[in-house]
Image 1 (cartoon, rainbow, N blue to C red):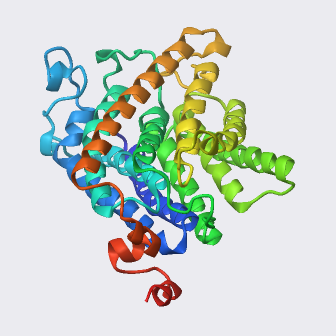
Image 2 (image 1 turned 60 degrees about the vertical axis):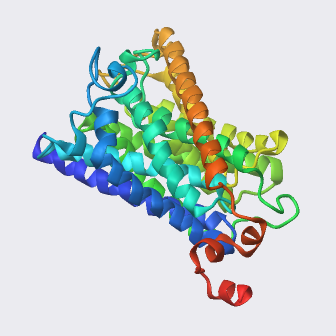
Image 3 (image 1 turned 45 degrees about the vertical axis):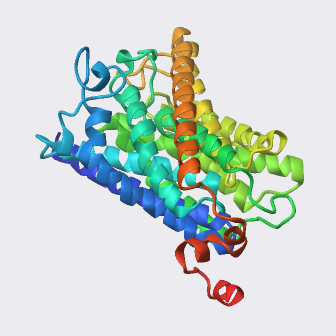
Length: 410
């Protein structure tokens, strides 16, 4: 790794770390004031727990070579223990360890938005630990190291985590929300975002950090990184245009919440394709995601699940949109390590994307459900009704973010 490449990857790593407090503010602005501190703590817990297990053993299992008759389960479903405790990893190789550690940290944090206002903090910390080991680790191995060792199609691509992170977190969020049940007062109490300024600050930090997330996934300061960076920029912009435009057409006005949601939807959709498509398709990725994710969040009312902050509709559906559109618009002329999609003469690649995403969805749903039920039957997932009424800031952390909440709950 050249000095320039190393410098870019160090910067990208720091940018992605910054996304976790950005996500905390984004989610924190969307919850009610009595629960904002709990949402901040749920995100902080993820960035505290995951790095510890990452350097101890999950990096080794999720990113080492595996292969026939090697590693855990013969190297077919997961890597091996060769790099446990980061043994024999030093110098610039540590940059890769740190960079992928930031991805592993933010993935469970995304799930927090679906369970806002009602999950025990103790259960959340155990969930992050178990889910990171049992779900994220094997999936990241399949996506980035060992597609060819599994039932998944070896031709599938995921530039920066559309499948491994966003689809994975989105379907896990749905499972956890279903097991937890709906928030008390949903449909009868005001549950609108309590602080749109906080929400927009968080959106800005996420957008800023996403340049490291996507462009850093090129692994070098080169043309692919530049392509990923500009694609990330324009997809976020058209995501906002799409979402706000639908609001304007349907409701006669655009909202700050909708604009922020559209930006994130566009960012999610371009993530799997950022380094594999050109600029004009990237514009379309964001626009389609902004429109379809808007409609996707309406489904929670129809199907009766309580995804508090629209993790399923934005991250799960946005990731699916990005993976499917990559199957259409992938262009090997943009990135020689990629391939061509349906519109560039290779229809089989779209099928590869579908197989890969379906496999990840099935695995994440099954294992997340087992973890959720196990925690529910042992320590319990959900706070009791009184604690939920009082607010999780007080009941789970004995503190509040705002002075007026302290007076109100006194």
